[in-house]
Amino acid sequence: MSPVTSSKAHQKAQEDASALAEPATSDSTADASVYFPPITGSTDSRLSIPFLARFPLAVSFGLFYGFALGASKGGAQAAYRYRAENAHRLPTTKSGWYLYHKSKNYHSIIGGVKEGLRWGGRLSGWTSLFIVTEEVIDQLRGRGSDKHRDVASTVCAGMATAGICNWKNRWDFFTSARMAKTALKVSLVYGLSQDLLSTLRGRRPAYVDWLMRHVWGRPETVEA
Image 1 (spheres, rainbow, N blue to C red):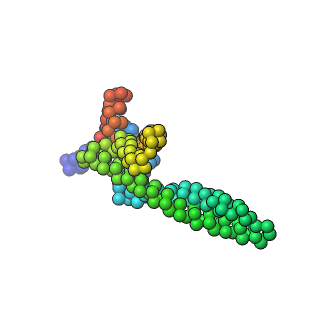
Image 2 (image 1 turned 90 degrees about the vertical axis):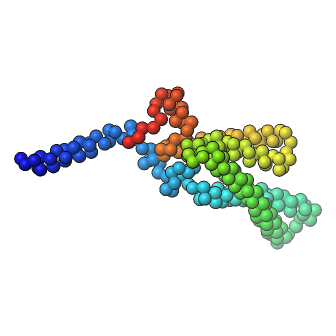
Image 3 (image 1 turned 90 degrees about the horizontal axis):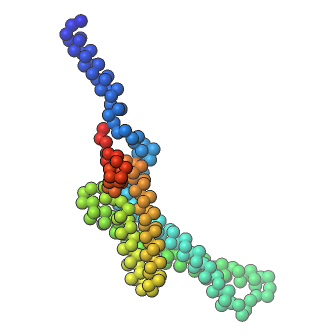
């Protein structure tokens, strides 16, 4: 065998050996991002959605959810108000009852739309304040690192939004305390859900790495 042929065969054997050894040197844990792919190409953002796309989505959700709540409440209140205002002149004929219910339904729809728009605007405003506050806290804590996009920023944003809401509405102490407790629970669940999804997609928050390193005794990351 010539030296050139021997060198090519040796090089090919080395490439085959490195190809076989490559999976063993990769991350020991399976890449969970294969099973939980990001919604967009931005894997470092919350919910894998950039802020400029997440903000209008959150505001739209608050608008529609607030409109649904306000419309159901406003429609019922408008119907009760119509019945109370016309209790002294109830119809006595079949056609009169038809017009009575038709007019009541009209007032109920108008009242529901008005109350729905009012509630939708208010809830979308508070939602936008929460999302912006969460992003600002992420930027202040992270300073270029995405490891600090975690539940702490979400809880701080939720409590800040609840505090502004209490101050604006001038609620009493017990109502403010109940509002703060609800904001704490909701923001905690929401933040932990985001952290769980980020961990499953391969971007672990800093406190998860700290727990794995100091509590469970596992390495922080294993690079391929």
